[in-house]
Image (cartoon, rainbow, N blue to C red):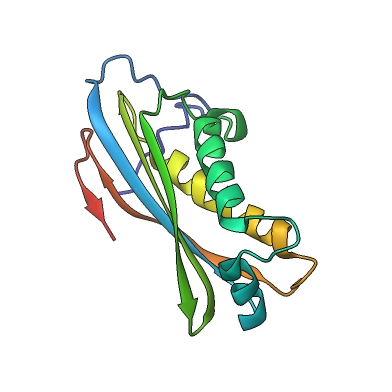
Length: 158
């Protein structure tokens, strides 16, 4: 049996899902990604000596702001009153880089997965933007949903 995509109507046209009949529940989502970089770039970030300023503070704020505006970036997303967004970083020496993690929370009729994924994506892009003069070979990958809770479909853990 083929799964039906909720963002398509019976004619296969894109549509915004009607969530009016759903219950309001507390929903959370956690996403992660990784920014790979040269060891020297990681040291620059961790020492606070990056020429553009505090890379992690800027990336954290950018991720939070992006999560709140997800509905403006992804055409069929609902506008959600997020109640919490966190963005955290964990340095890695091997391979050199930063693990980026975001958690989003909402009391709503639909999930907050896209907000967590957008937060991670924009935080990664901000790290790249702030450090590209030092390391144009940086890359980011592995952006994925790690966990989601709440709603009719229940809990998902990767």
